[in-house]
Image 1: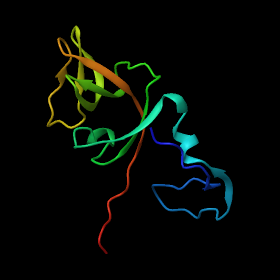
Image 2: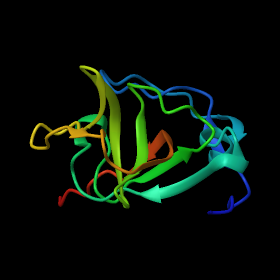
Image 3: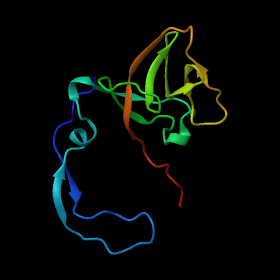
Image 4: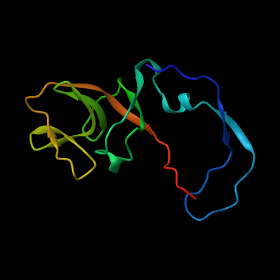
Amino acid sequence: MIEPAGGTQPLMGCRVRAGFPSPADDHLDVEIDLHAHVVRRPASTYFVRAEGDSMRGDGIHHGDLLVVDRSLEPLPGRVVVIAVDGEPTVKRLARQGEGIVLLASNPRFAPIPLAGRECHVWGVVTHVVHALPEVAP
C-alpha cells in the first residue's frame, strides 16, 4: 500500500471553467491534501496502475493511477478491480440476463461472463488520476 506523501498543496478559491474563458480570482482560499480528498477510508484503500485501453470510455487510460476502496460493495454499475481465474483486471460490473458480466468501456472488447470462473473482487475504483498528453508546440 502507498503511504500518504503528507503535506498539503494550495487550492484556488475559484473554479476554472472548461468552456468559455473568464477571469479567475488570483488568490488562494485554502490548503488541500490530495490524499485526504481521494481517500475516504485509508485502512481499506490502495492505489494501482491501469494497463491497456479497455476502459478508455470511462476515462481510464494506460498508466493511470486508480484509487481503489476494498470496503465498498461491488454492485452492478460500479467499476471494480477483480481477479478472474487469477488474472487481475479493471472492468464495470453488470447484470446480463441471469448472470453477472464484466464490461469494458471500449467496444473492441467483449463482455466477460463470470459464471463458472474463479473471481475475487479486489475493490471498487473511486478515482482516476492521469496526466494529460504532452503536445509538441
